[in-house]
Image (cartoon, rainbow, N blue to C red; front, side, top):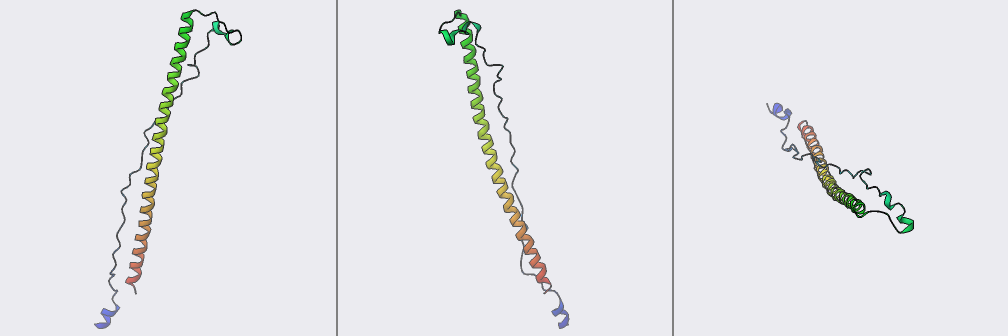
Length: 129
């Protein structure tokens, strides 16, 4: 009977804690901004065509006012695009930071899995000694 007890496998005294991961994959919700089309860029009226070399023009006041209004509108569109680009860039940076944190959490989990596997392997090895 003593030989039977001596030949029985010894119970392992170690405990391996199975890892779990709680990381959630980041998602990106930003939309890249659209630049104003070059077709929206105001064309210089014909009445201003000689202004660059003569310094004079033949435009009526309403033609100049309409042209400058178009220029102002185009500049406002560009400012809006700029603001949207800044917002988009910040969303990209935030997403990259979230992705980095997610990657770090997954790497930590992978390390825990490796440690768990080693612990289980050692536990199995010691059962047969």
